[in-house]
Length: 80
Image 1: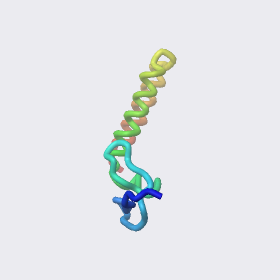
Image 2 (image 1 turned 45 degrees about the horizontal axis):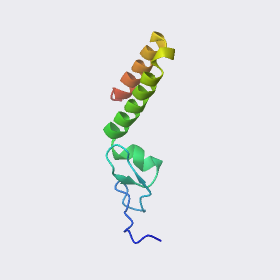
Image 3 (image 1 turned 180 degrees about the horizontal axis):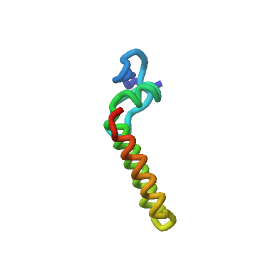
């Protein structure tokens, strides 16, 4: 066992955090808390991953597919 102190989830503060956000490095305990911790953070992270994937596959992606992804990202940004 490690002697490192266990940290509580920075979102719910009820259980130990087993994960860390790859964008802001906040500790969280599960998927629900990850989604809640910061919409801007999670949205930026996923947008970055989508754009990386599009860039890697740019030669195999049609302009229509690129526009579809851009449309999805715009819908995510719109407030409900």
